[in-house]
Length: 58
Image 1 (cartoon, rainbow, N blue to C red):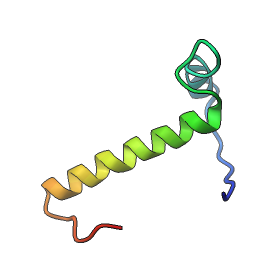
Image 2: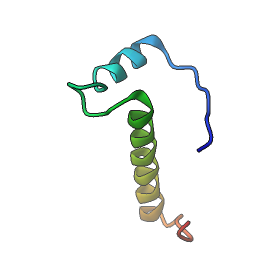
Image 3: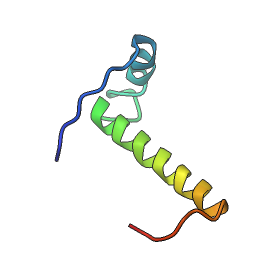
Image 4: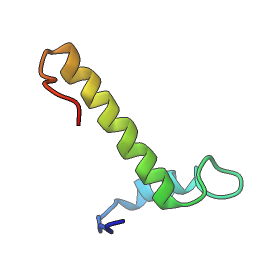
């Protein structure tokens, strides 16, 4: 799996960390970020489909 590096504002990272760990919804930061990316891309696909911009499945 490729690795990427991003800069994240401290306030966003702190909010993310509230959802990670034994008491959180995600095991680690990577899982939380992957889930967020998937959800965002799904939402963008839905918007494109409604706007008639969706041309094919990938």
